[in-house]
Image (cartoon, rainbow, N blue to C red):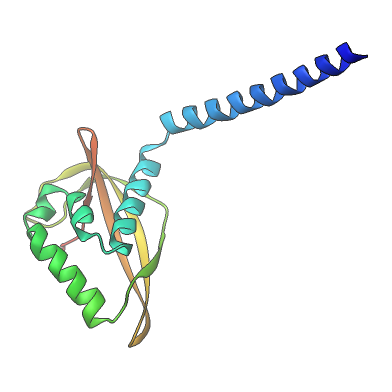
Length: 157
């Protein structure tokens, strides 16, 4: 009788460990095989998490060199805080991300480099400020260069 209980308990422990290993393995494999579109969407999500926390220095680091040429890190940090926090009177915002769309070729502007396999991710930011509630819709573009995924904005007319 005692042996049956031990055997049953051991079987339960083995079953729980087996299920745990399967779960961890599934998460690992899923992480290895995340699609480029999902990776691009995750990068945009990370960017806006930094923006939500007013960590504009970190979000600036995620820009493509073409965007970094448009403003220095100091200027970006100062502008973002000044415009959104001071002018609009908001402390933070919420956002939603749309589905990524792959573009074979894309340029941030007529002067910008032509980039291949860029992902366009629609973003809607919702602000609640002293002047009421408002939304800002912007398409954010993401391209992979070497190991890094980089953020771009659209400056086309």
